[in-house]
Image 1 (cartoon, rainbow, N blue to C red):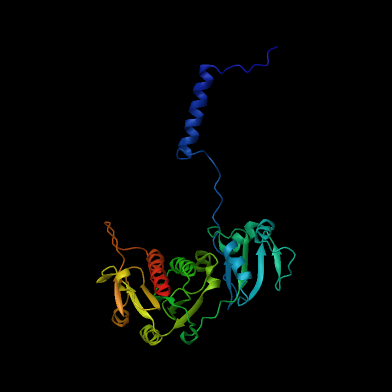
Image 2 (cartoon, rainbow, N blue to C red):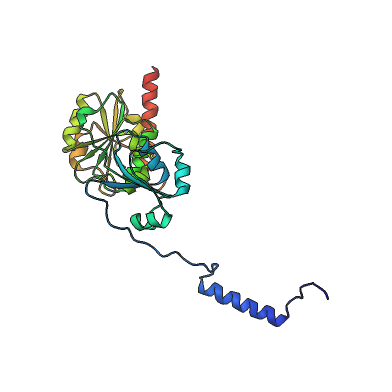
Length: 286
């Protein structure tokens, strides 16, 4: 008896093609697969606490002595990737499955198998600003994704502080911290009640304050002067408020020769920080 597999008859091939066509039609032309059901976020954390998640975010929080952590939920795989080893942690650690964290964060959150509950970092007063030559000031930027991305760029380019208003600004949250990818633990957060007064204090401390505006009269690189720079960015759509525009030392634009003349605030922040850092390096070299 031959073990060779006999080729299908033309009739068999015809029906196989029909079955494949039917499956593809049901799946929109894509291979059929089961979608995981979406899980909404669970109840909020207890009063005074927030939930931070993601490997970079949690690792940075663990290394920050100012961060008060109450408990951790972590998968075995994530625990290995955090490289904690046998180090004793001063808070409860619960080994869980990924779906257990999904039930808390919702399945749309990219938690990477680890979540902590912690107290927020305490914002500092403007009087606590050190001798840093570069700071970022946000004029009512409320999107936590944007603020998180801005914090990441600020830390990457060596900004010493992020100054925000106590009202109408993004508050510390899991979304903001995840977008910052661990950078939240490496920058001073300063809250002020009156931004115009805070800009005045920066002037007295030797800062040149530059407001980013797509219609600014000069290119940003041509505006820099002095040894301390405060870059001021406004909210999406609204931009800088009228009072802020009147108070800064200068309004400047990014040179964009293309057909689009404005950027997302987090992208504008990154480019502006790069330019400011180059200016400050040049001043230091003289």
